[in-house]
Image (cartoon, rainbow, N blue to C red; front, side):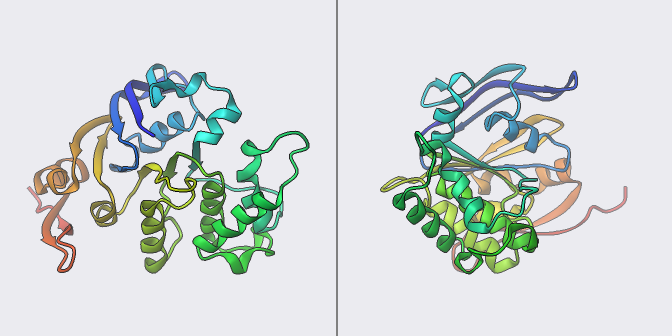
Length: 264
């Protein structure tokens, strides 16, 4: 499913935080948003998953205005993992993941055997099957993150919106989660989801993303394949660091070594 943002601006409390964003995520592509803190990544994503409405512009799925869809229909198409997501109630991990099935349920809303199978599979895919009966509030930050990702996957969306999905995860889990997302888990049989994700780790973004959009002060300042976008000049301008580009010895993906810019 194709995701298009056209002329999207977002305002919060009367202050415009995101300005005139044009972004396209082709069907089955993994698109990364990168930029320094406060650049507008999370605000833009909140607009995409309908926590905020655009002050201008549109968010469309295969040409349909996402914000015009009924909530249940939108939730069958798009799932989100916000940066600060969770629950104040001590549900078990299985119960949290089962919330992802609600858009697909009718009538009493009771989970079917098929729903339970989807939830079990989602927990297993994120390496959290052993947490199934644990209370969510007692989990570590990394365990909670995996359970919440399982909830999003259990929703079987066509589009996944992820805000810093590798937060709280160790290195191995970061690689596993991004590989899992890229391989298309959770989008339904035979489908690979379109993914829009914000990432802080530029090296993870370079390896896993098909395209990157770089935000600064709420505007896109560069877009394209990671190899073309992550230049030393742009990283100095946007992130205020000196970057040295190297290539991964096996994949050939661009990787970055950083140090401080010399004092002027």
